[in-house]
Every structure is written in C-alpha cells, then in structure tokens.
Image 1: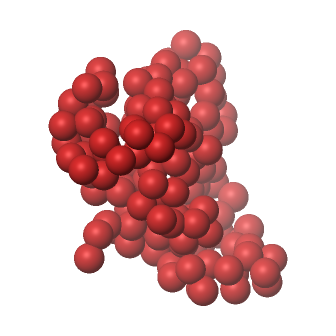
Image 2: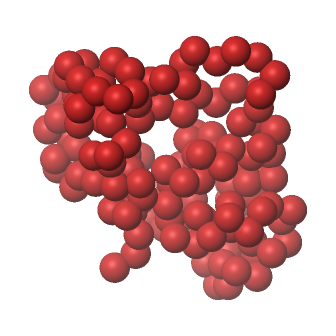
Length: 145
C-alpha cells in the first residue's frame, strides 16, 4: 500500500482509489464492453468463454459468474462499471444494491426512503452496527437461485 488510508476503517465501504483502479482494470474494461449489444449477447450465450477473453484474475471471473458484486468490488470493480453486469441480466441498480446488503429490493427501498442505515455502530470497524462485516451477506444474496 503506497499511502496511508485511514478510510479503510469504515465498515461496509470500499473506496475506489488508484490502487483499486489498477487492481480492477481488466474487470472494469470487461464491464464497459457490455455497453455494446453484441458483447452482451456473446456474454449471455457463454459467460465463461467471454470472460476468458479478458486478462482478469480467476477470482474476478468467478465473482462475475457468481454475480457476487461485493467480491467484485473488493477485487477492484467500480460499482458504476459493475452495474453493466446487472443490467445485462435485467437487474436494476436498486435490485443489485439490495442483493449486496442481503435485502430484497423492497427492503432496500424502504431502508433508503427512511433515511438509510443508522450511523450508530457503523462509524468504524469493530462496532456492532448492521453495516459491520459480520452482519453482511458478502454477496450471498446476489447469487443465482
């Protein structure tokens, strides 16, 4: 790690900084390729074959296959680029965000309308708020049925 990063102590938060950008370069390039209809069709026809065309790590490819957006973010994915994967599968950003928190789309919407998560217990790692890692699905809710 090149610089001191005091923001790494914020639960449930991955800051997309220069290090994350470098780590996720090919993952994010793959996501951007999904802006073209012909690439979306190729990806949907054979996800593994399409992913193997990209210089991504096996972990990154597996996160995409599992629709584990939390893991993809840890591996350098930018949420705005990762949204292209969800859109390719017909998911709204709200559905994706809900899956990343272990909530249904309706539960996530209700939480956001009511003001979002409480900051109580969520200011730094080690507290016991609902955004703390021990209370997160780490992508399980986003996996296919």
